[in-house]
Length: 234
Image 1: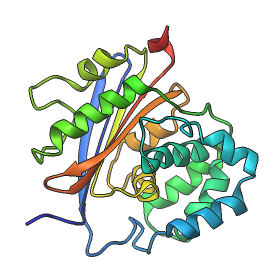
Image 2 (image 1 turned 135 degrees about the vertical axis):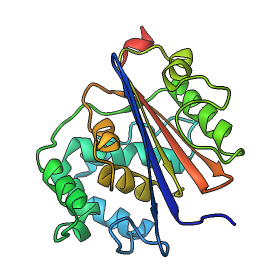
Image 3 (image 1 turned 135 degrees about the horizontal axis):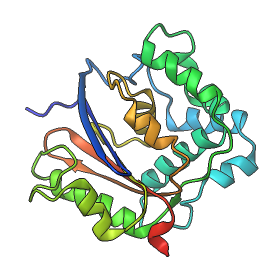
Image 4 (image 1 turned 120 degrees about the horizontal axis):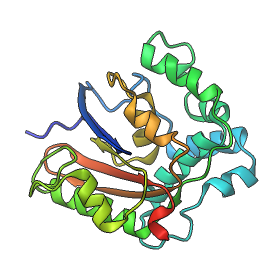
């Protein structure tokens, strides 16, 4: 039986080393990780226009013209960019339900975002998107998880075969195909002691991103995010 609401996270980054971790949380129903109903698309749109100016929303929409991405994949990038652009405004728009939380991960996220301001925007790169797509298509139909390819290729070798950047990082979310739920999940990073997913999204060493949301045999959906700098474009 498919574990419809089983949520698994995986994170990795590489500079001189590679770190990977997997965490799973069983959810009783289709709720956000905070235990509260996540905002609908309409609510999210209304909230973002209250917290951000149109200029900021446009600035974060770096994937607008990326024809190789789906609308939901473009939204994943835009939400990540809004968090990088103004963490406090992001909390107001999308994390208001966490501000009175007693959960240590949720509380630390709110605290962290208060100090986030004007980070470099993540710009989609087609080669990084191909790297993310390859991995999602590799593990999805087989019901696998983790960063290594099913043939044993390491995360770093796979990404660098598409895009040879200096800094390289990867997040994998399992269970969701909704952009806001994916980004909330990765930012909260519940039960991930290293907070690797959150750190990847908010790492100012990164300015390029690839995203792929695909079906997953065991967990219904997976979303792969591959991060890097601009060195792979030189």
